[in-house]
Length: 137
Image 1: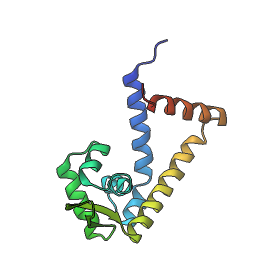
Image 2 (image 1 turned 180 degrees about the vertical axis):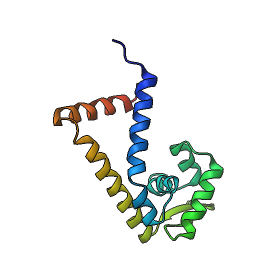
Image 3 (image 1 turned 90 degrees about the horizontal axis):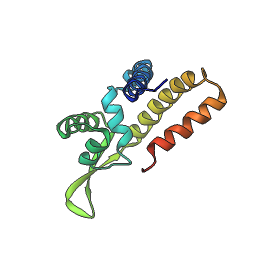
Image 4 (image 1 turned 90 degrees about the vertical axis):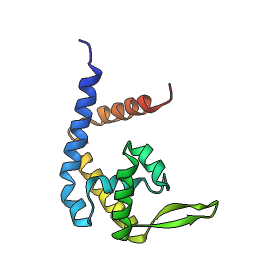
């Protein structure tokens, strides 16, 4: 039996959606919308809005709105980049770090509940498969 890549993609997307839906309450308590959470979680790895847009496959205009909201909520701040005074980089505030960490913990707990349905050997194999799929060709 052949495995359809589109079907696997769809199943993966559904799993991610179910996990995120289960975390909506925690995100709401933290004052975050789902996409704001993803932007917040990406700030340390990509401190410039354009980099965040690229990493998250979001339109730059949408990232601008999410950044504006996160700044207003006190989760991130803009700082002038010492390397290029024309640019602003984004930095997590203490409140932003706490919100991100709590949201990630909720996400991890829900994902762990799903992982508990499969054997430890299958989890190890899943990790190996995902790492292989992410490695450069």
